[in-house]
Image (cartoon, rainbow, N blue to C red; front, side, top):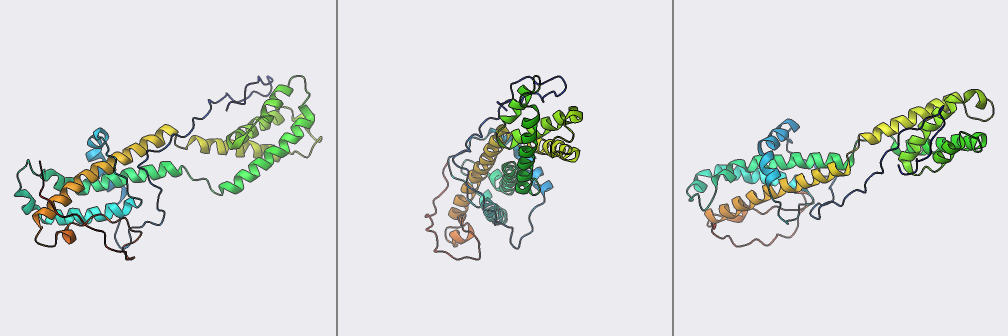
Length: 299
């Protein structure tokens, strides 16, 4: 917090100054807004232990992967669900894929497609949690009450000590506070000040010891909450890993789908290996998406 620069009195030490928070870096352009209404519908979602296991199996490859510029679906959960179905179909057709020369198709893509999908969903969950941060119960109400309490105690503080020979610099420094984090820190400092000078302040204002204790508790509680929030660096890293995991999945999926369409080009290939649909729900119908003509795999 840039505002806290003055030296307080010996009886009311200020908290050590914190460095100013960095501005949140912009997310990569491929990142889309979350669709909060996404669910697994009638399917049973994989548990987080399964997702973490898939991530661990491919973590090194994903981190080393150079992400493509293809945009991530606005409904990534839908993409995962559709990919898992395609992976099941491809594994059922494994013998047909195995007929291709290894220079034409890497059979390992078939065997890892499901794991790639689950690893991406793990990265998605991690990113979503960082994006939302740690929840705080009834945050709006708490902040209003915290700011009101700060204003009331600060008003009395200015009345008592604004011109005090030793406490005036501390009071002036607290008065400069702006924003929620400053307000929480100010409450802690105000509480310390009043506790140290209670004998001379008692009865001279409407401030009570209960209010002072509440100020100390509320300020400390909100500061602890802020310390648990992800840093800009953590959020940026999670967004990058999410994009890498998606690109790593999309690369394999594209090859599997294109090759599958070629192998089954005479057996309704677009139904057997469909393109991912970015529709809000499988229950809603929309005009069919034009499908590309199947082409043979190339080296």
